[in-house]
Amino acid sequence: MDLGNLAQYGRSRSTTGWATNPLRRVVWWLIAPYFRGAATRIDAAINAKFDALVAANALDASVGAGSSASAAEFGKTWQERLSATVASQMGGLRKDSYAIAQRLAGIEEERGTLTERMSSLMREFYSTTDGFDRRHGQLEQAIRDVQAQVASHPDDKGLVVAKSPSGDRLLVRQHDHIGRRIIDGEEWEPHVRKAIEAAADPDGIAVDAGAYIGIHTMTMSRCFSAVHAFEPQKGIFQVLCGNLALNERLNVTTHNVALYDRSSAMRLAPQDHQEVEVPIRDGQPRYERLKNAAALSFEIAASGEEQIDAIALDALELDNVRMIKIDTQGSDFHVLKGAKQTILRCRPIVIFEWEQELAALHNSTMKDLHEFFDNIDYEVEILHETTPKRQLDYIAKPRLGA
Image 1 (cartoon, rainbow, N blue to C red):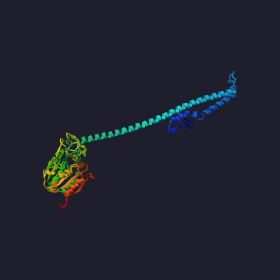
Image 2: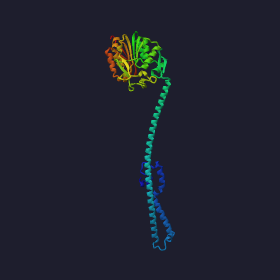
Image 3: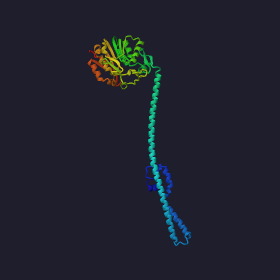
Image 4: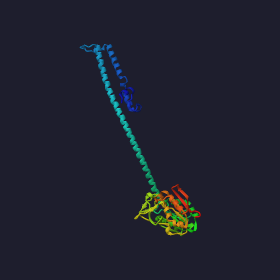
C-alpha cells in the first residue's frame, strides 16, 4: 500500500476501492485528520499561542530569574522543541498508520483467499448436491421399477388368457411387451398376418421359424393344411403348446429346437449380445421378469455350455412348403441357408426379418441375403420398416417365369 496515496486520496493502489471496502473507509475517517494539513495547522496554533504569551508579558514571567537568555531566544528554543515534539508525534502516527495500512492489506489478501476458498467450497457443495440429486433420482426410479414389477407379477407365472383381435385365445404374460399389446386389444404385426393370408394355400405347408407364443402360427393354421412351428426356448415353447391346445389347432407340429444352417448346439447369447436385459436363474431366463421374451438371441455354443439343439430345415425333407416365416433375432440368413434345398424344391413365399446389429453377431450382411435370393431367382421387397435401415421385415417371392 502506498502511504502517500493514502494520505492524499484516501485510497490505496489495490484493485479493491474504498467504495466497496467498508473497513478501510472507517479506518480512514479515524486517521484522515492527521494527513490533511495537520502539521501546518499544529505549527500555526503553536505560533499563535506563543505570540499571545509574548504580548501579555507572560513569557518574561515564566523565565527564571537566573536565566541569561533573552525572551526571544527562549521563545525560539521553546518553539523548536514543540515543533520537534510535534514532528516526533507525527512520525509515530505515520508509523501507526503504515502498520494499519499493512494490516488492511493483509486483511484484503486474507479476504481474497477466503473468498476463493468459499467459492471452491460452494463449487464442491453444488457438485455434491448434483451427485446426490442424480443418485436420488436413480433410487426413485429403481423403487418405481420394483413397484411396477410387484404390481405386474402377482405370482411367478404371470400368465393370463387374452383374446387377440383375430379371435384366438392366447396365454400371455402381463408384463411382456407383446403380451401387454394383446391384452390392450392391439394386433401384433398386422403386416405379417396380411402377407400370410395373401399366400394362403389350403393344400400347402407353412413353416414358422421363431414361432414365439404362436401369434402367427394361429394364422398359418387357418390358411394352410399343416404348419411346422419351431421355438427353441423351453419356457416359451410350453406357452406355444398351451395356446395351440387352447385353440385346438391340431394341424400344427411343434419343434422345441432352433433352425440354423446345420445341425449344431446353440446357447443363449451373453448379455452384451442381447437387445433386452435378461434376468437368469439356474441358467434359465426368468420369463416372469423378462420384458420382451421374443427379443432373445442365440448363438453357436461351445462344449460344456447350456445347450439348445439346432437343425437345418432341409433335414426334415418337407414337400409342398408354400410359406416360410423367419424371425430368429439375427440368424435369419443362416436359417435360409439351411432351408435352401427346400426353397429350391418348393418355391415358397418367404417372410424374414433383418436386424442389422444382431445379424452382424452372426457374421451376415444384407448383401449376403440379396445374393442368396438372386442366386435362387427370387425378388425381395420391403414388407414393413420398423426402424429405418436397421430393423425391417422383407418378403421374397419367386420371379415370374422362374
